[in-house]
Every structure is written in C-alpha cells, then in structure tokens.
Length: 235
Ligand SMILES: [Zn+2]
Image (cartoon, rainbow, N blue to C red; front, side):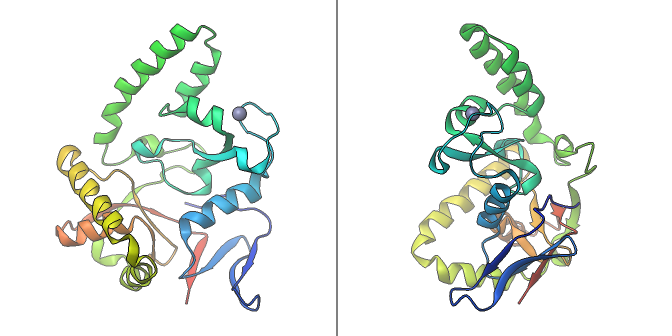
C-alpha cells in the first residue's frame, strides 16, 4: 500500500548539509537513522496543518493539538499517515477506542448518559478485533488490503536499525523490556500481534521492532506486515 504524503517535505541533518528525508516522484526517502514514528507525525501535520482540529473544526495553538489514531492502536491501528489525524486534546480523549464508524455514530448522540452507554457497548464489541490475525478491519476502500503475512526471515535491515536504536536509547533498556513483555503477554492471550510490523518497499523494518524481535526469538515464521510501496530507506 501507499502512504499519504504531502507534496513536499525535506529534512536536513544536524549540520544542515545532507538531506535525511525527502520526497521525490511521490516516494518518501528516509535515512535509516530517522525515527519513523516521529516522521509519520510530522508528515501528518505537513498534510493537515498544525492549526485546525479535524474533528470539531476549531482552531488551536500547536501545543493543544495532538495526533489521533483513526483506527485505535489497541486494535492494530498503525503509525502511518493514512491512520493519523490532528485532533484537539478534547476530541482525541473523547474518541478514545472507538472505531471510525462508531465515532461518527457517537457524535450524533446528544445525551451524555446515552453516549457513555454507547461507548461501553462499542468497547465490548471491539474486543474481538484483537483476535483478527489478518487485521481485516484495517482494510479501506481506497487502499484495499493493508496487512499481509510476510516471512520473518524476509524482513531486512532490522538488525542494523535495532542496534542503532539500542545505542541511542541505552538508558531506556528497562522500558524496552517492559514493552517486550507486553508483546509476549498479548501474543499469549490473543495468539496475535497488537499491531502489524511496518516495512518499506524493500522490506526494511520501519516499525514494530519489539514485535519483530519477539517473533524471531519465538521462532514465529510469519508475521503480519504492512509494506509501504512509496517509502524507501537509504543508508
Ligand atoms: Zn476538536
């Protein structure tokens, strides 16, 4: 699938000399040490602007806007521009873990009590989404299938990126272990990954490092993957 990109976006290294991110012929090129997650957020603001909440339509100072996941992270909603949208903090909190169509229905309800009852019912219903190993609820009319299975040993570049990132974040080791335990626990309970792994056109690992490491360690031969055809990692 292709991610949504702004017309232009360029980022330079610290010295301001070399491009570490750029868009050419509608393809996003990113150097391997750029944080994919942060980049997706910055691109989302580049697409929508950093002023207007896309839910209530009101204008906010930049620090009052946040990035909402259209399909909640708890149900596999990935950190790619197609799934990210700037919402004000209030709208973001209110949307909580509702799926997009539930959110629309929610906004139609005026009474407070009725609203909270509706949310409760939705959250209970959504629990089954965690068991969907194909993540079929991530499919969209425009992009079709987002997720497919990919052999774990076909995913490339993970090692280098993992090593680089662990050097950068050595102080956060315990945070990483906590995350790893979370992935393991989730897998044990639902026989699934919480989120699909994200790779670029050439199957370089971009997102889901912890899930990927867990899959490798557990000798899981196939993982759910979103392959971004218009993203290329360079070294
Ligand atoms: Zn809002």
